[in-house]
Amino acid sequence: MENPINNTVFITGINGFTGKHLEACLINKGFKVYGTTFSPPKKENHFKCDILNSNELKKTILKVKPNYVVHLAAISFVASQDISKIYETNVIGTLNLLEVLCKLNMPIKKVLLASSAAVYGNIGTVLSEEMCPKPVNHYGNSKLVMENMSTNYFNKLNIVITRPFNYTGVGQEEQFLIPKIVEHFKQNKKSIELGNINTFREYNNVKFLTSSYQKLLMSNFKSGAVNIASGKTYSIKNILEIMSYVSSYNIKVERNEKFVRKHEIRELKGSPNKLIDLVGKLDDGCSLRKTLEEMYLA
Image 1: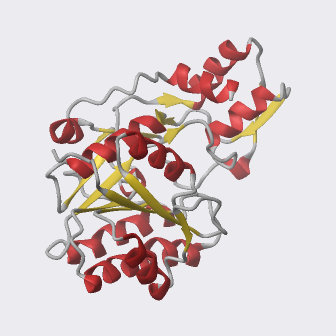
Image 2 (image 1 turned 180 degrees about the horizontal axis):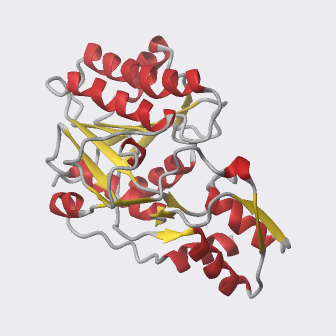
């Protein structure tokens, strides 16, 4: 693996939940970090840039002159109702980025494209990279289209595609399930409206993901996809039980059908074997209980 010293990373969507944590992780490892924001930036190393605007992307990348690129900017909320925006951002935005990087012909060492475990759909119990993806929603399908499209650039750029399974942590938006549950407990709410509480997901700490990304950037792996997975899953019922223990009180669950997704995937568990083979065993020291405690006390 390469030494990160004096290497510059360019992150699209740097002010999002993942971007903020990844920026902190990379700076801590000695990288110079810059990135794009859709809203007016609040830091000198952040630049307002719409990834759907190729000219803006080109100007920003020329300004940064990165050695590494991490593409996080996307519509990442599965239940988003703006279907055309999902495809436009997740597919065309990625296409614009790859096209600009190729035309600039800069010495980019690695391009990391964030896909999603949602590409797998509901095809098995333990999901591995060798399986044929069959997404069941527009978000997962947009990410699969992005993956397929990016293979056309494998001979031009050193690309690694990541498929993160569910992750959470301090600072995640409340439109996502775990922050919503934690916030209800923080506010001592008597009840919470949820959908199916018997679905099983990985709920890895975002630090697990950022550590994986940093090590993949430094690895020799390219031209393929890799799960960002621990292989450990929990139900929403498990989450509620842990939060009851952490907060010392119980909350009443009221089922709301609008939160029950059509074609709900019962369990999303990833095989971490390929990731371990590529970067070694990752241990961020954060159990699910510790993660929830951090969020509850933040």
